[in-house]
Image (cartoon, rainbow over all chains, first blue to last red; front, top):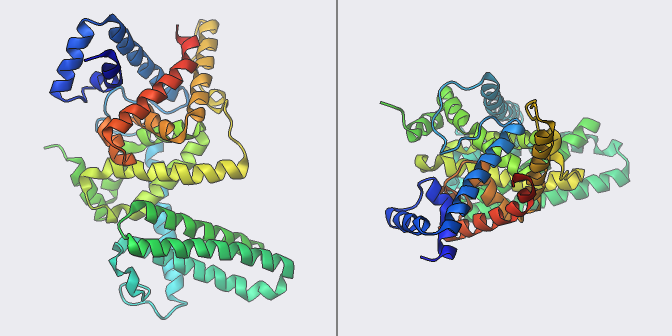
Length: 206
Length: 184
């Protein structure tokens, strides 16, 4: 094998990720090639520097090898994960509860009566349902106070909302076609967040 | 017998909170490392980490292959970094190429000169990451800060293994030019 073929494999060789044939080929080559040995040493050194770089930024001890299952974790990281999980649960639970009091077209399983959504995984449907409930609530609040706002401002707000609604609608169509695609799901949730963000700003200012 | 990751994922999917904690604790550091490499700002990376966890929590029950949890989680982190990263930087116009070094905490050293060189090196790395194109930055950040193997990076990005190798090789070469003056 030539140096050009060996060099891109050295990083994976160092971490034992090559298959036995390729690994043996690299070994044979570097025994007789000082340049590739030097390249391998440099990669090793750079890897150490990247680890130091992460540590210096306060990301403790990026592992030198593959991450192994660790024992006790620092309390701060426990709080980070718990906080995010709790926030997600809280948002969904609060929104669900509030919405059940305002709508009567929700069936016993929490679905919003959209047959086209049935192929979508249940948790995603639930997330969509929660977002739609929140949007509905905030939209209602906005519509109720709209007449008190400056007409120019209303036009501007409505325009922003229409853009956000169109993005959501587009993603929902894509989700119906690709119900398992995580990227489509991510984009849909992101668009819901944007829509909610606009509505929150409006209602907080009312 | 040690609990496998797939078992932990299965338990977490069924609403087992301690399993969820164990699972995400395991990945906090590498995901944070990856996000730091993508953004160059620790505070921003923390925000994106929170967003990643929130989305992962909502979507976890829909994960079909428990054994693919790692790639799935990093895939979410990657999407969050792409979406939020772009919009936030655009909104705030706050891409700070010197950010990483401004935030870097260097242990007190008896040698101020070495300390200064190290700061310059970290500044060069931060700037280097920010100037890589998105694919190279993603590949290298997953590799050296996210602790991912080549095969896993291929699964996260959807690229072939050959492409992953090429992206990382080229990213390393670009970064080396920036690091070289400080590591000789």
